[in-house]
Length: 240
Image (cartoon, rainbow, N blue to C red; front, side):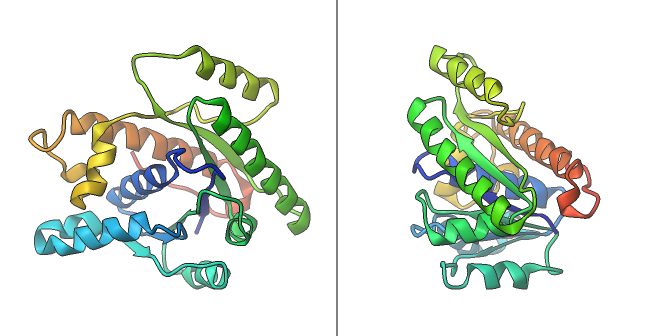
C-alpha cells in the first residue's frame, strides 16, 4: 500500500487538484484509494459531500474512492496506520503551510509529490518541502522518494520563468515529473459539481476527454516511479 503525500508549504500551488485528479484516475483503473484530507479547509471532503448529494446519479464518482476529512496533527499517524491493508493507495492532501501534520505525513510516506507552478515563489517554497523531506529521511534513516510536478501549466505556452525554474531543478538534480498537470477547466469543474473527471460531458465543460487523458498520464508516471522504488515493497500495476 503506497502512501503518497502531496505537499507544498505555499497555498495555491495546485496541491488539492493534483491529489483529487490522481485519486480519481487510480480509482477509475480499479484500485481502491483513500484520500486523507488534512487541509484545514477540507476541499476534498466538500467535493465528496457534493458527490454524495447527487445520490445514485453520482455514485460512480466514488467507486473505489474513499475520503476521510477528519484528519489532524493529533490523529494523522493513526489514520495512516489504520489504512494499512484496507486500500491499495493512500493519498494525503496536506495543508499549504509548514506544520507538525505535514512533517508526520512526510515521514510516513512512500513518495512525496511537490506541486509547483512556474513561479519563483512556488519554487522557493518547494525547496522548503524538499528540506523537510531530507530531514525526515535522516530522522527515519531511510530514503523518502519525491518529485516535483508542474501544475496549472498552459499547454500552448512555455513561459521563460518556467523554463528557468526547470533548468534550475535539473542543475540541482531535483527529480521532476516528465508529465505536467495542465490548466484545464475540467479540473475546476469537478469541485464545483461533485463529479469525477470521467463523468464530465462536453455540455458541462470543454474537452473533458483531454483532461482525463492528462490525469491518466500523470497517474501513470506516478505508478512507474513507485514501481521503481524499493520503499513500497510491492509491485505497482499500470493504471492506463
